[in-house]
Length: 298
Image (cartoon, rainbow, N blue to C red; front, side, top):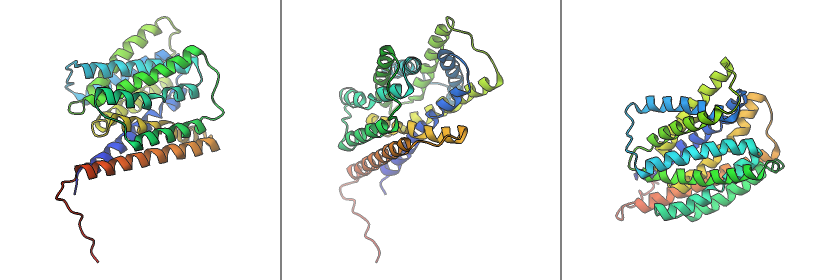
């Protein structure tokens, strides 16, 4: 049996798990009554400690790919925090989701991974699903906030490509560096903003953000991105908003709207079909020439 197919499916599940943990952000952040940069900085401190403990002996070689992934990840987190403050959440997510287009371009130029037909079709379907998902929530905010969201999409694309460059190494160290940078920058900005009010509820939420929403997500992402293309990885990351209504329903008891259900179903179907087609294509491509299908028993 060709071993490539199960690996790709396992990597796709790991990236889906990443999106699942990323989607926890909204629920945890609602429990913290702090300004955004204090939340981002504290979350990154916890995440950095968690990742350092997970790695035990981090392999920091400060290669261009390792540093590039770290800086682009830190920039994405900081830009997205600002975008969520200066524009609507729907605008921030949708404008950031130009990332698959940028990833396709950067991947083709920097690592020679050209997007496949299923990736392009998958992106179009996911974009349509997101438009339906957030229908009625768009608008508002400022030009600066919208531009920050677009910029976060570009840096997010660079993050995926730089992480994919480390497919033969250990990309998790880039996440460790990213959270150190984010903690320092967000901490410096927070010095000029209102001080956070400490409480057990806020502390527990920050711990959840750092360990689950960021820490475990980084572990799964670093494992998965080594086994699928950057373009496919960023498409699977599009599952993140699909999980958001689930958390809102479970924690707040709010039923998702019809638009959220339809849009989420389209996104989920697009990601599943794209991943399965890619897995099948890679299996056929890596099958030995003399390997023949096993005849079925009558």
